[in-house]
Length: 144
Image 1 (cartoon, rainbow, N blue to C red):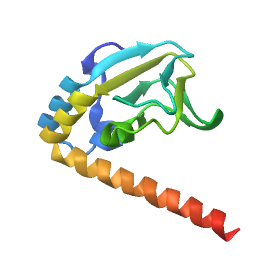
Image 2: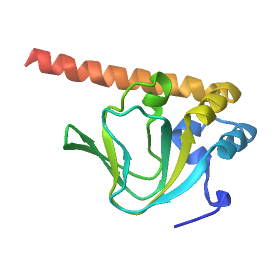
Image 3: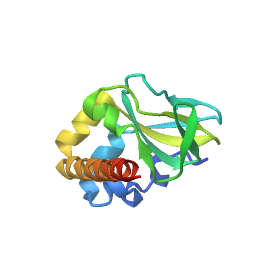
Image 4: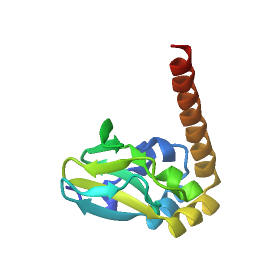
């Protein structure tokens, strides 16, 4: 596992790809670097979320109602919806391997959104994409 902030290029993460160097430094200062072992529950479906996670290294499984629905890896993130609406998590995420994560807590997340307006726009775009995907799934279920 890597350890220092110098090892992390946030601009390669889609969410931060358009941020300026100054904005990236603001974001980086707000993130806490955490290493977790395999088998750790990172968030639990139905509980109120207070963190946003960015995966630097490792792999996690996403489960909904006990069923595996996805696998996440480096450059992917989760937890942003719970931070935006403070509602219960929609899925459980468990580390499958040792992982290096960047974690952003609720207070830090709000500060970053205030300090880096392009990030708020990207989150809105990501949420719109999720909504469209969800609508498309519902429409395909109804038409069958």
